[in-house]
Amino acid sequence: MSQTRYPLPDLNQLPEDIRAKVLEVQEKAGFVPNVFLALARRPAEWRAFFAYHDALMTPETVGRTSGLSKGDREMIVTTTSAANHCLYCVVAHGAILRIYEKKPLVADQVAVNYRKADITPRQRAMLDFAMKVCLRSDEIDDADFEALHAHGFSDEDAWDIAAITAFFGLSNRMASFSGMTPNPEFYLMGRVPKAK
Image (spheres, one colour):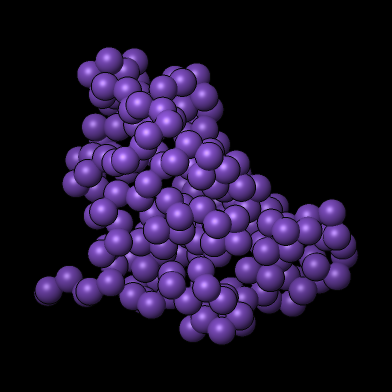
């Protein structure tokens, strides 16, 4: 990772709970996504960041259900991160989106122009709402909720869409200002189907 502004901490010097989580991610993914080390320079902030991340992106881990699929959540992140010009999040979450949706083209499509992407009308309505939260949250009104309701989304789902968008607005800005670069592994993930 060519992170010039802030040096990455040594994995062996991290607090045990953070080191254990990073090693768990490495075991599962086969590499350590750069965000895990970049944010670990401030352990209290790392813990808060990933606790909120996990509550939003894997709500079942905190005993909550969501009307959004894993693919929906990653689609929100990829689309709004592109609007925020965050290379790290577009590449990293685009990789996860391709895997969850089993569509090798979808991440590139939603990052460039979700309105022309190969997605469902329900997903398009979800992204319309997310993009309004991302770019003009002060203009959200009842009509925006009604558009979601027409596609079967609840008010709790709207909260999820908005919270994911807002949280990754923070993530986008941290990644961009610090010069965080995507791991090379992300670029190829989910593009070529695995041999069966």
